[in-house]
Length: 349
Image 1: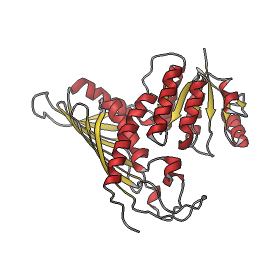
Image 2: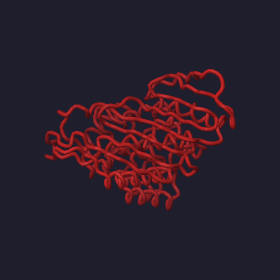
Image 3: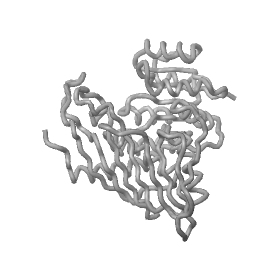
Image 4: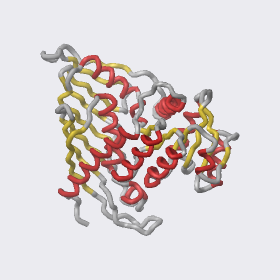
């Protein structure tokens, strides 16, 4: 059996849908059978590039009738609606993160997939990198308790104050800023690799460049955070400290300490560093540098993510971030965002 996949939202010349399509066409168990986008010409060009036999559909409903599962790569504010419509059509669901732009929409999406009983998955690609797998193996084999986790993640493009207002700065279209965009990835890695679920979260946020040149919609005032510092406690007492910024940060970095030692990693490296410790004892010996398998950077991670999606569609065992898992992440981020609003530290104009 081959999985028939429909793609909703194809993006511009480059975009997440293109990463997904590259992964799907490498999988001999899957076919991109149908494509839908509000821009039909763009959808046709996408189909011609990746799957010439795919039907370019006039509506999502036409696409649903042709496929087993749907890969949703539309703008953030449309995610929940497409998840609900796909679930109601009883098709498997893959939706790019974020699940939705607010907690109410996330709950609506979770209720829909659970009522329909369909396979569902939210796209957190960094859990498919070798760094996440290596960290997970160390935690499982050498640790019985985690004491603390510190981490950081972000980007640099928006540090340029001449970049005009864009959808990422519009709370209606994107939801949160750095906290949601980067923090969601970090929380997924904490859950996937370390088994840490957040019990309580607080946050401080700042918008360092509060005004931009007007964007296509005429907006100038940035509506979400440029940088956020989240502090949290896990369900088993783990202390978590995360820094996220879109104004000057490099690859994902994590430091995890516990009764099995200390693990230090950066997604910019091809190794992780482990400082071994005996449970109930002291640190021992020299730090160990653990080489990671040579999975091609980034696109290779998408290839693995799409393979996991196909596994789920075909009814095979697969470990992914479900819509329910993504709802838990959003609940933690929502609590952090409420805390940040109460302690506003945004610089004045």
